[in-house]
Amino acid sequence: MKTQTIYTCEACGKHFSRANEAYTCEAQHMCLSLDLYYRYLSLYKDISDRSAGLNAIKGRRSKKVAGLAYERAADSLIAFGLKHKTS
Image (cartoon, rainbow, N blue to C red; front, side):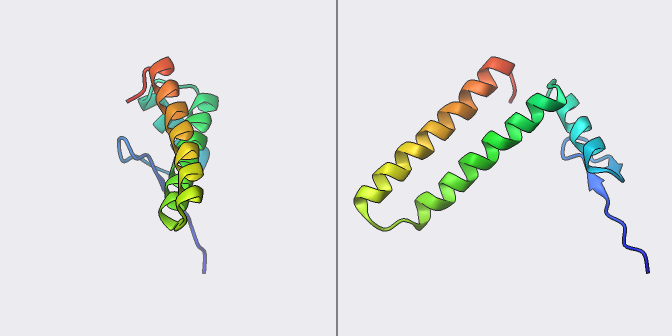
């Protein structure tokens, strides 16, 4: 039996056999180079992780520190979007 992974561009729905091809297609839809698209994905993952951590914290002081980290991550993603005019 052979297992085959199919990657799909989230913007246009094209199917690819390699992840790099799908990332390239998505980057083109956002008018970004592949390096900038990887940076965008990193920032997006960071804010997702911070959001999950913020929701898991119970203590007020810890929640405040986590909230500041979340705000910094959000500011970084917003600044990236404004600099590179992504939506």
